[in-house]
View 1 (cartoon, rainbow, N blue to C red):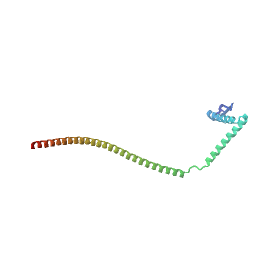
View 2: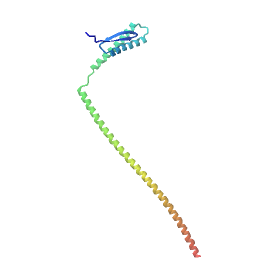
View 3: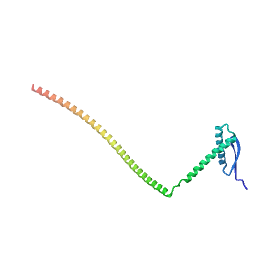
Length: 173
């Protein structure tokens, strides 16, 4: 009969122990490492205990952990698994929420498109406003030049009127 057992030698709390089992060597090493860590922890906290007392206390702690996990496992089994009706209700609610989310996404896309349109229109309006400002500046320059020409013409007219008056006075004399 073939021996299908794996074997490892583990150092546990400073002593070597052979560990054998049908599980993988990696799993057997994990078990040995776990026990070693627990024993080292207890030995650090209780230096006055003998090796056998550390081993017993470690066994008690591991048994406590094991029984608590077994109890938790049993309580989980007792909990009612989801019924088909519950699953269908959850799917229905999920579909409604997905539909609502799709509607919100569509609404968000529409608002984003409106915002983009408004920004584009704002850019166009600002470009138009710049053109109008430039046009107004050009017209103000033209008006300024026209006012200067008018002033020059008024000055010339005044000069001409003065000359006319002088000529009229000379002709009267």
